[in-house]
Length: 262
Image 1 (cartoon, rainbow, N blue to C red):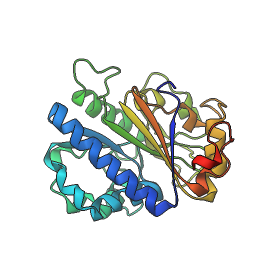
Image 2 (image 1 turned 30 degrees about the vertical axis):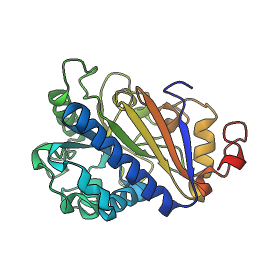
Image 3 (image 1 turned 180 degrees about the vertical axis):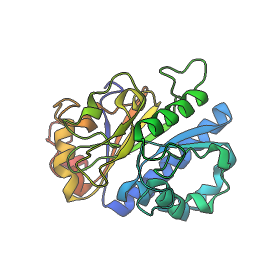
Image 4 (image 1 turned 90 degrees about the vertical axis):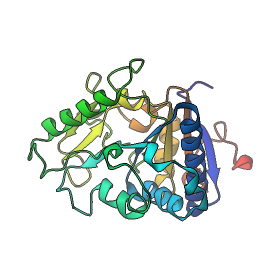
């Protein structure tokens, strides 16, 4: 198994998946802080990303994390005003971030449409790329920090972050952050990490729960290539996990994941 081949972890239902992923992430953060003094995590929005954050908030183990020594980033964001309830960062604050003692300087929200760049999403994306480059260490590649864990929800069409099948953003090979226009999912204007930036993470965790994700999971694992199925192009430098519930795993070919082990 290479780092690009996801390790599949299937849970009974979406609630158990969220709780298990929360426990796994807390452990990973604590281990990273013990090894290097700090940790960095890239958050994802959507129902699975938010369920994970809510599960961390409800976990007694959350107090094991030194929240002041954690850097938080985002994989993508809806390019809307800063207080818009549709923004991933606003939802993340409601689910967890406002309840834990984070260092505000280490919470790296993507720019909003009412920020200094106004409606220029490309300039806002370049600003976030600069922030990433500033945080990168001497051994880090591409001007991106080596995130400990980068979380991604898998969409029903196999999109991850705001990289959609056959969309120009999924073909980007040079930039680490892009402005996305004309996204097939509202709102049409977004900011997203690119696949090269995503692949700089030590670990990438793909989250999918529910029957509506079963086709996307099966397609992503069948090797169609990242242009047709962006989720298949998301992997970490040392490990890639695909965290699923049984409904999302329903259509995985038996040779990849025998039903008996689900």
